[in-house]
Each structure stands twice: as C-alpha cells, then as structure tokens.
Length: 227
Image (cartoon, rainbow, N blue to C red; front, side, top):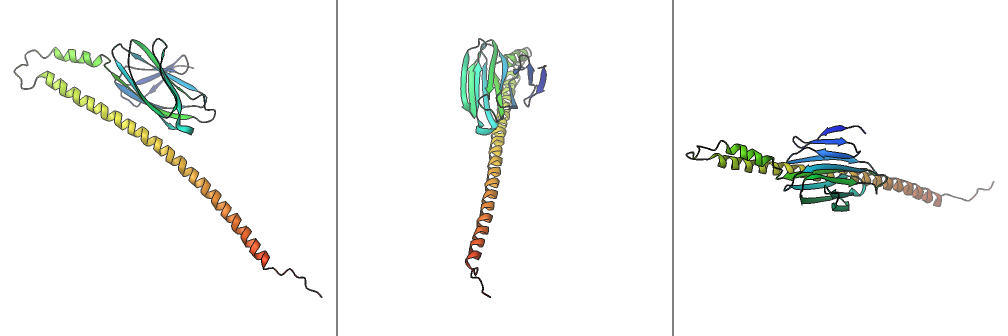
C-alpha cells in the first residue's frame, strides 16, 4: 500500500500511513485525536515517537459497531507489551516514556461481520518543546526587575491559560465522542423498535382476520335446503 497522509482533527497533527501496511506515525504535538473505521477481521496499528522523561496518555472509545468492543494493546520501543485490553468499549492509559517509537494497535479480527468506528486521543506531556520555549523567553528577562509584573509572571500566566484551554478542548472532544456513541446506540434502538412494531402490527392484522373468519363461520347456516 502506498504512503498516505491524513490530517487529523487535532491542531498541527499528521497521521502518516506508510509501509508496513497498517502502521502510522503522529508528528510531535501536545495532543491530538483521530476517528477511523476498523473493518471486520482487520488490525490497525499506529506509532508515536517519544522522548525519555515524557509521558503518553491515550484514551479510546468504540463509537459504533456490534458489541461496541475492540482489542487494544500498547508496545514499548523494545517490543514489550505494556497494556492489553481484550474486547473493551473504552479505556484510558498513561505511561512514562523512554526514547523510541511506541506502537498501539486496535484489533477487530474476532469479528467477521461488523466493522467498528473508533475514536482515540493522544496527550503528550513534557515532550521538551515547551521547556525550550521557556529558555528562549528567559533571554529577554534582563533589566525587568523594576517592572510591576515580570516576564516570568506573564509567561506563567500564559502557560496556565494555555494548559486550561488545552484541557477544555480535550474534554470537549471526549464529550463529542460520548455523544456520537450514544447517538449511534439510540439510532440502533430506534430501528429495532420500528422493526418489531411492524412485526407486531402484521401479527395483529393476521389474528384479526382469522378471528373475523372464525366468527363468520359460526353464524353461517350449514343446513342444505330441500327442493
């Protein structure tokens, strides 16, 4: 399969599908989310490069599909399985990372008919980029001791607002995922109610027809007239 590039919902985040088939990489970013369809009998894997000392948090949900379940596993850069979830509808996991590419896979091979719609979100902390930005800010702090508010205070306030806004976006994305899953369940229940309502209506019509026929036959004069 040739290389493909898909732009995700999250800011400045790219998903690269490249050989081997089913493998993908996320560009360095603080957070990002992705929704995709996993066909029946298939496994889809992604990988995320990490630095030592950083933390990786991944949350996933099955939004649609029979059973609302999927197998999930996370492997370290050395190929050691760190997390394995069997046929779960959602999960949240956080690990302390080391240098290398982490691989996480969603497995739907146990299903031969139903495809699954899966949402997942990655949150990367202490990736090193923000710390470098703070060091760049400190170059301009000299001579600001007489100011009522130092640049350190401004930077701290900006980082606090940024963190709160990022968390708000993450919560909104999770709420959207919950809403999508609940809507799919409601639509499925609506279709089932309509189907069984039509079945009950058909049975009632047949029973009514049989009852009318039986009552009519009771009042029929079966005596034959003699001439």
